[in-house]
Amino acid sequence: MAKLVLDLHEIYNKGNLIDKELNRVIDEAIEKKIKTLEIIPGKGSGQLKKKVLRFLNQKHIRKKYHRLDKDSKNFGRLFVYF
Image (cartoon, rainbow, N blue to C red; front, side, top):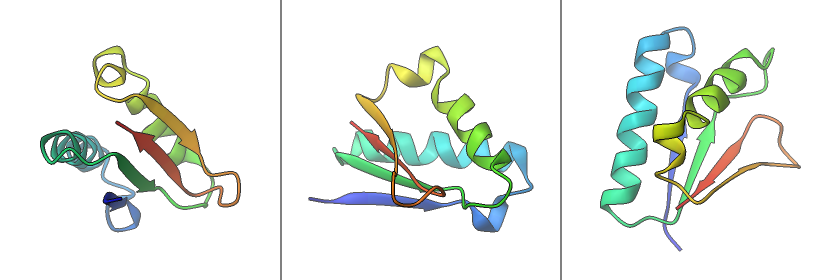
């Protein structure tokens, strides 16, 4: 099963780029019919993960995916299923 991975470590402090990259990778997953998107906000203070979760919980974004899971074994990783 193919999956996309988005590692946000490089742009963790650039809020506008984070939203742009999240939009891009979600659209890419839908376009390529990829079932799983792995997002790595990292462990840190948890602020980036909260930002990503707020982004993913927006009504117009939630319509695009089926399910969102937090990795129980790795606090710094999220899975989005289409």
